Length: 567
Image 1 (cartoon, rainbow, N blue to C red):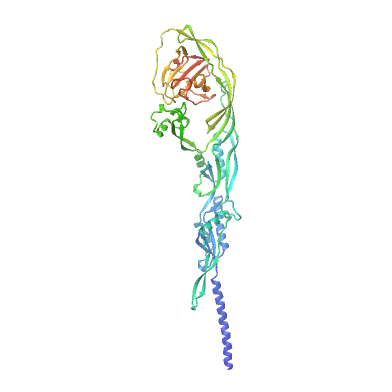
Image 2 (cartoon, rainbow, N blue to C red):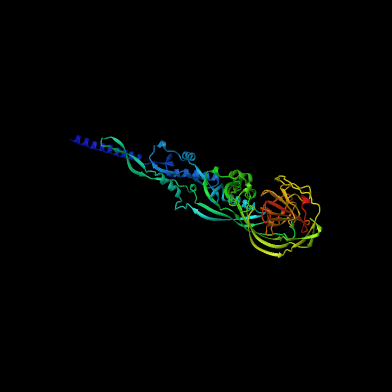
């Protein structure tokens, strides 16, 4: 009996030892099945496993820091990087260095840059806002005299994508969109048959986003750029002729389009160099516009005005059968260059303009026909005009009259012309075609106003009971009219005395030339012109029965026969 009790006690001790060992083993087994590492995923795909979350965070931060130092600007990681607490085998767990190398090969990034928008469209992307502003400043200064300065007015107008707390707005939206499910934990259970079986419980291990502040996009910043102040250096010019000094004051100077500089994040290869961006902004696009013909219009003048050619207009308007028979109100298409970025200026100009004196002719029987004698001296009047001249990229687009003051009234000159018969001169005409470039006539002092082209339809002298003081040379509408000699424009505008659109050039030697009935005028008062320069187009404005140029040469205000100079 005693031996039996001893055996029982001994067995209990053994069972306790066995039970204890079993408990310890079970404890270690349960502990071994707990999450022991962290899986790192890029856009939901696991790329590595490390022991601690801190290692994952440090690996990500190191990569971002290295990239920022390398590029010298802010960057933004494109992908969403997450970390999840998981259970892994020891051999699957990597070092931080290995994870860094893997992440470096897996993630991609954009770098901060600045877009230049013109009228809402992105035209160029450059590295920094400073570069964008320098480009815009340089473009503005191109339309000022050399040495002038420009200060831009840069105004922050909008800030979007504002962060809420952690600054993770975009990242959070990205995670929600992918609908990541919580991780599941596998545990070991008794299936009731004395066998161990794997079972999946809905115990969750949260997925966390790895946050690196330097890898997030900063809020977008938009700035409107205008020209603030202009330091315009005065250009050195030749002293204009007496009575033609023009006072000019720049009153407006700005970009003709809305210009915005906006921060963005973009692939590095899409960023342009400063020179590339400037060339794009200085370029043109071709724009198709419709144009309705008005009184006095012709295809030649329309082409010159819109920076195209008559041939190109006819090419894109096959419905035009005869360009010389166009009707008022007809609509044609024009393909015209449209600058991407242009400068709009307003300049107030004050200048003196001639009021051409009327010339009255009276018959005188003691003189032969075509002979004249000044019966009463006259003179031109003078008026002072102030206008606002509006230009785009240096080309005048319109002008507004501000004030007009007559300083000296003109006095009519009376000229007697003979009626006594004498042998008639041989009539002369020519049908030479006008050339595109003018050359001097054989006379030396003056050249033919149409460079030898057109047809002489009316000579200088007695005509219809009056006196014709110039030559009428017929040509198709828009044919170029050239300056007969170099000089200064003293009149360029519409004359109500019958000349229609008229140009007067003073040649600074006692001679003036008149070009009347023009369709278009290409020079302004005070402008110096050279011999052979295209100054106007042939037309039929004023008292005219057809397209022609009325050409006069005056010596000290008195008309003389131009025929001897140009034929």
